[in-house]
Length: 521
Image (tube, rainbow, N blue to C red):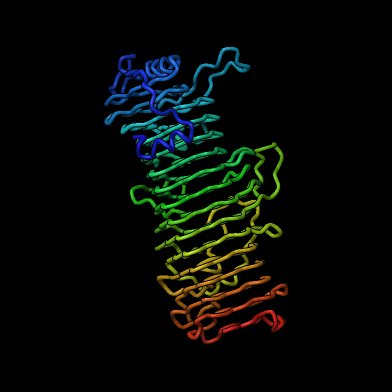
């Protein structure tokens, strides 16, 4: 199976390659494959023997092996044959292990189904299934086991396996280095917080050819420490979620640096009923910094989205959870983001928000070759709503309600560039297509709009200091193309655009000097 991601990639990440290892069949250690006999001791015996030998393969043949928490060992491969299922116990006490000798608190310690702390060179692979039996743990007042948990580990490979029904997040990789996750299939719809895949404060991570279907966030990067997620690649994946399909955040103490997402498909779940999120998925792509930290050098390209609430959501907020130092952090930074070649269809009326905070703009974002289709149906009263800042609120694409723009609502932004953008609504929509508020150095080059009559201006600039619109094309009649307002607004330019279908090309608010706007046909 490793050949699918290439030996070079595996070796580059420091993973073991090619050594002949002794095989430890769990049946030989006394494990029963009947799905009823608790096999924790026998399975742990096999793992410990392989670890003590300096490495080896623990093999799970066809059958169902019932177990509580298992501690992973360095140098060990878990091989799940076709037809093999590791089934988590439904009794929470089976996840509490005796305290380590000499522990300061002689109390049982909670562990997850497959639990690794400080281990290295661990592989979990095969055509079998890891099923957490997670519907037994729907009481979220207690600890709920994850199927896979790694903390401060190095050189981890998870490949090919099917992951089902976790008691919490399906898998969590925290403060790890050199992680490859390839070709796995996740279905997590049995309890609260059923994320599909969570990378936390880790670096050098490759996620490829995975299928994730989850009630909570799908493929999610977090940083619940002062250490950022760094050098993460996500490619050729399918993510379906009742919450956010591809997400950086919410926890963002360290931030996210050098992240690449490419060739992915996103849609709302069709084979499950919502437990925690919304029947219709929330954001297709969510990039969020709300607990300090920096999001920088993030690239997303070749993503297809359908049926979610909002295809794109960017938020710089100030919730301020003190992950790193115990003290409330200041506002972080969200900058240097490229979103390219993204298509979306059948998205809700909500609209897309790119929203920073006063004095803390989202900076240097490029949106290029973006085609979005919405349900439409928004009314003109939505354009006059006062949108609260909500700096400390939990970030979610629905946090501002139905936006004044059906396309993009951009507030507290700087250096935002739109290139070759197409926006459409299935039903007539009376709101703006693009709205800029407290914006600086805006460029829109190539904008394809359907137009609308009996509607607000298609484009609106409020307190905008420098915006250049070129290559705007109206495909249907519109009452008004551009409305400009705000005592700080200046240097607004419309040029080289096909706007003959507009009854009025522009409108300046009362008191705004004529030189604030230039029309250059």
